Image 1 (cartoon, rainbow, N blue to C red):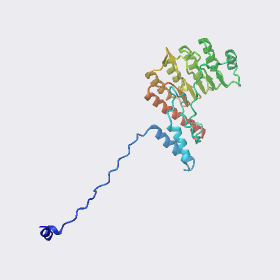
Image 2: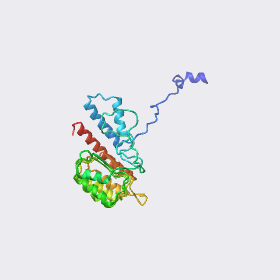
Image 3: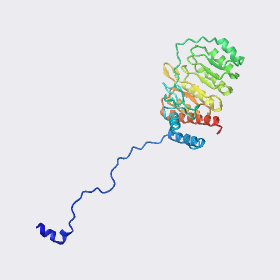
Image 4: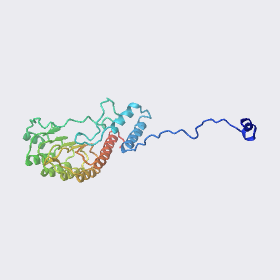
Length: 285
């Protein structure tokens, strides 16, 4: 039968079976990563660096840019007190040194004794003493009248660039004084009011007063406690994030964020301000 089959017309067309794979070989697709605002900012900064450096950006420069945009968030949370991104301890030198993150500063020691003489310091502020650039009242409990005296004196002061009043017992009644200070003073660059007793709606008013301020670069208002609870709610955080849009000078900001959406919104504005500051330093603005 086999000989008959081979001899037949069909048998002459016999082709031995050979196993073959048709089509392209299956390759597992890589997981697609969602593009974030940080990717956009990284590409933007990288393009600008290439233009300025004649397309000579090396791996170290790229790592430095990634360190600026790829660490944790720009904004301070419960355990982060700086609005700039905490840098990795790699020793890399960023091409944008002033805009990159500083190390997370340690929380203010609430048990540390402050030996400052309030009346003497007030006199220096009122007399516009040029030797007083930083005024630290941390851990000195003040009544409402003393706080008002400090804010009133600071309105006309042109020498103090940094005012620290953490854990001073500042309450809602003193916020109007700080609002007037921020709207009038054009010298102050840093204001710290952490660990006081300011309610969320008054923090909103404080941040909203920055819409006309063009000199303040740092504002710290985290760890406000009213009745042993953090004072800001979701609505307050949304209002604070929206208010930050109108200010273009603030580069560092701390708050106990609970709402991720508000935090991300504020994050974009702080990043925008850092970019504006960088361009001013490089003469690009």
